[in-house]
Length: 296
Image 1 (spheres, rainbow, N blue to C red):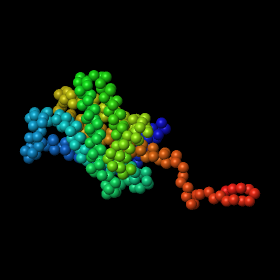
Image 2 (cartoon, one colour; image 1 turned 90 degrees about the horizontal axis):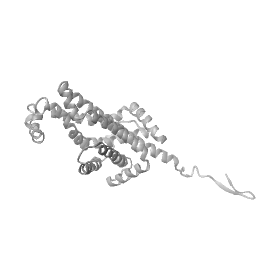
Image 3 (spheres, one colour; image 1 turned 30 degrees about the vertical axis):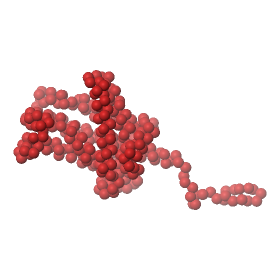
Image 4 (spheres, helix red, strand yellow; image 1 turned 60 degrees about the vertical axis):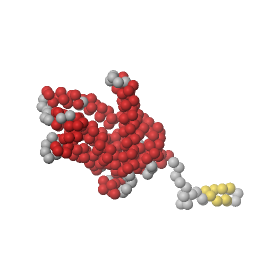
C-alpha cells in the first residue's frame, strides 16, 4: 500500500516537472477541437454542402439551426472523442508510455524521440483500444438488456464493473510498449499485472474515472439544455471547453499514473531479485591446509 502514496505524490511531481508528458494528450485535444470546429462550421457555406447532409440524416435538420446547433456540439463530443481516441489517441497513449520510460532511464523526455523510435506499433495500439472499447460496449449492452430502467442500484453496479474492466485492461498498452509484446500477449500480461497489484491499480484508475463521472453528472446534456434556456445559448460553448479540459486532464492522469505504477512495480521487483554473480563479484574460495575452505 505504500506504493499507492508514492504514485500520487510522484505523479503530480512528474507532471509538474516534466511538462512535455502533457504533449500527447494536448495533441489529442487539438484533434478533437478541429473536428468540433468542423461541426461548428457545418451549417455555413461552403462547408454545409459536404458536412450538413450526414448530420441532417443522423440527427435531423433542427440541429443545424440556432440555438440547437450549439447544444449539438456538446452532444456530438462523445462521438468525436471516440473517433479521435481510436485513430489518434490510442497511438499517442503508447507514445506517452515511451516518454515515461525516457524519464525512468535518465534520457531527455522528448516527444520527437518517442515518435521516431518505432517502439509503438500503430496497428497494435488501435487494436488494443478496440478491445477495451468492446469490453465497455459489451458490458453496457448486457446491463441495458438486464436492467432497461435506470435505478440507483443499477448505476452503482455498472460503475463498479466499469472500474474493474478498466483496471483489468489498464496495463495492455504499457505491456505492449515496455515488453514489445503481440496484442494478445499484451492483453494477458496486462491482466496478470492487475491481478498482481489489484488495489493500487484500482485506486489509480478510480480517481480520474471519478472526475469524469462527477463532471458527467453535473454537466449532463439535459442540464446543458436547461442552462441554455435560463441564461444564453452560447453557454454551451463553455461546457464544450470544460468537457474537453476535464477529458484531457483525466486521460493524462490515468495514462501517466498507470505507466508510473508499472515502473514502480517493476523497479521494486528488480530490487528484490538477487544480484547476478559475475567474474568480478564472485567470491573466491581456496583450500588452506589445516583450516579448510576460507574466503580469499
